[in-house]
Figure 1 (cartoon, rainbow, N blue to C red):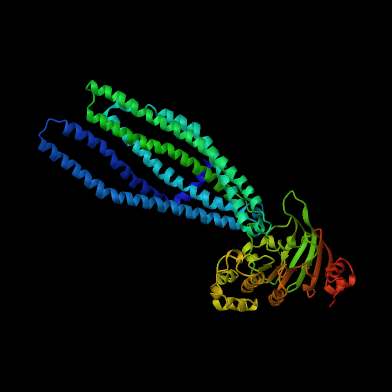
Figure 2 (tube, rainbow, N blue to C red):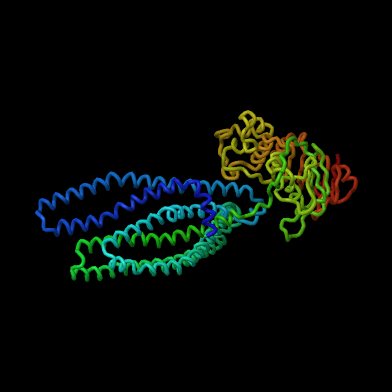
Length: 585
C-alpha cells in the first residue's frame, strides 16, 4: 500500500532500534514455549513414572529450580528493554512525523487555511498521527513476534505429533477468509469515523473561539442543537464501525473456539488407544493456547493495523496538500532593500475559477513614501496589500520590489523586509516578552524594551504583575485592544523592516488609545515605504499619495489636497465623514 511505503521513510532511520526490539521480543515470547514441555516431562517422566518418591522430588526440584531462575533473572531485563526500545522508537518516529507536518503546515498558503477548519488540521496532526503508533508497535514489532511464536509452536507440535498438529491448524483457512472479508470494509469505516471526529473537533474549536458571540446573542440552545447534530453524526459513524468490528471479533473468536474441541476429541481418542500419553495430551492442549493466543493477536492486529492505515491515509492527505506559494528554482536572496514597490498591470482572483477582485492595477511607490489605500469595503484594498508579502500570487501582471519580481526572490528574504500591523493582530498565549521578540527572536533585552518604548507600550507593561514576563492569555485576551495594538507595533519596531503595511491599525479604538498608537505608527513609518489601509480618512491626510480603489480598480490617485480640489469620489467620502465640513491641509 502506498501509505505504508511512505510511512517507512520515517521508520527507516530507526530500523536498528526496531530490530533490537524484535530480537529481545523473541526471547520474551520464546521462553513460555518451554512450559508445556516441562509440564509433559513432569507428568509422564515424574508423576506417572515408576520411580521412588525421593527421586521424583529431587528431579522436580531441579527442573523447577532452573526454570524459576531463568524466568526471574532473565525475564525482567528482557521485558524492560523490550518495552523501553519499543516506546522509544515509536515515539521518536511520531516526533519526526509531527515535526515534518508542522513544517509543512507553515508552508501552506492562506488559501488552504481559509478553506479548512483549524480543528480538522489539529485532528490530523494529533489524533491521526498518534493512531499510526499502533502500526509501529503492532505491525513492525508484535506482528512478527506473534508470527515467530506461531511458527515455533507449530514446529514443536509437529515434532510431538504430526496428525494432531494438522487437526489443530485445520481452521487456519477460515481465518484467512474472515480477514479478507472483513478488513477492507473496516478500513473504510475507520476512515469515515476519523473524518466525522475531525469535523466535530473543527466545529468545537470554532465555537470555543467564538464563545463571546454565542453568549452575546443568547445562542446557547441553538448551538447545543448544532453540536448535537455533528456529535450524532460522529456517533452514527462510530456505531457503524463498532458493529462491523464486533462482527469481525465474533467470527474470529468462534473459529478460535472450534480448534480446542477438535484437538481434545482427537487427542482423547489417541490416549484411549494408547497412541498418546496423558502428559503429551496436556502439553498439546497447552500449546493450543500458545498457538491461538498469537493468532488472536494477529487477527486483532488486523483491526488495529486497519485503523492505523486509515489514519495514515488521512495524515498523508494533509502531507499532499500542495503549496500555492513557494520559492521558484534559483530564487535569489534579497540583500539590501531600498523599498521601491511597483504594481505593474496587476490582476488577482482568490480562486482559479473565481471572479477577479483586482483589475490591471498600475501603481508606483517610491522608496520611503507613504501610500494610503482608501475606498468602500470590498473594493480590493486588503487584497492588494496581501500581494506584497506573497500571501497570494498575482493572477496577471507582476509586483516588483527594487526592480525584482517578488516571485523571483525567496519568500523568507522578502517577508523579512515587511512588517505588518493589522486591525486584529494575532498575539500568542505567551509572555509579553515572547510576543514582542517574535519580531526578532535574537534581539537583546535592551532592544526589546526600546521597541516597546517606541510603541508607547513600556508604560503600561511595567505595572503589570510580572512586567514583560506577564502571560497575556490566548490571542492576548488579558489585554485591551489598544494594548494589543501597541504590542504588535513593538514587534514590528523590533523587526525593523524596510516596508510597512498598516491595515486598519487604529480602527475600533478609543480616542486615547488611537492617539498613542497614531504617535507610535508615525514614528514607525519614518523613512520606511509605508502602505496604509484606512476607512477613517482624517488619519491619512499626511500620506504622500492617496489611492482610491473601487471594484478592484484605481479610480483616483493624488495627495489629499489634489483629490480634494478635484472634488471627485475621495472628496465626497471625506465630506460625508466630516458631516459636510471638508478639512484640507
